[in-house]
Image (cartoon, rainbow, N blue to C red; front, side):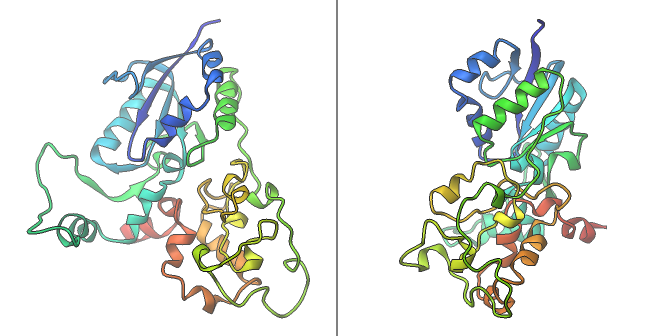
Length: 296
């Protein structure tokens, strides 16, 4: 059988998604029987050849990222947005809460360790975009695989589907379906809130490993986050941070989370949190309504 020609590219991110491909371990060897990776940052091929599948990780943050994404779209038969940054903008997207000028001033001039700093300016430096974008907001995308990074199991499944000519099946439900923590009060009808306080994880001396985080006053993004990560953080007794992004058809991840919390804890308790918006939209702000309403 003819091998699928694959090119991978990195935009703006931590490079963790590319490293996750290596986490396939022995399974990567079996996949290489069906795919030929002709270009990637790992083998250091600069140009983008004609390929059947282009895999892009990272968000679009500057003009160089845009140029790479457009080149991949021209050369690849199909495009896979690989990881949460590519699919939703990721952590990078939190800068969309501020103007580009404010971001550059803070980074190069106002930091506590900077002396006589200035914003660099050169034609050799790619210009920053006014707002961070997900890949599909710049080019047409055929498949999306969320995750920060995606699990080896999901990577293997999606690539096998694409190799077989099938549309990959991505989980649709929220993370609570993968979580086996017990709910003692969440579904008991009553007028009182389940908890009257919101805690940071380091504020509690003890966190019950079997009880729902929300019932303990800890913000867990599970109700507004797609399943598929195998609840890795939750199993480690750490609340979900939302890195799998929103469920299908609910791109306003933060608003969905507020809706889920409405009957659990009072809104006033959340106001004491340092960054309410950053919690709800930590990984998905670029695909929310706000930045593009402002631009238009």
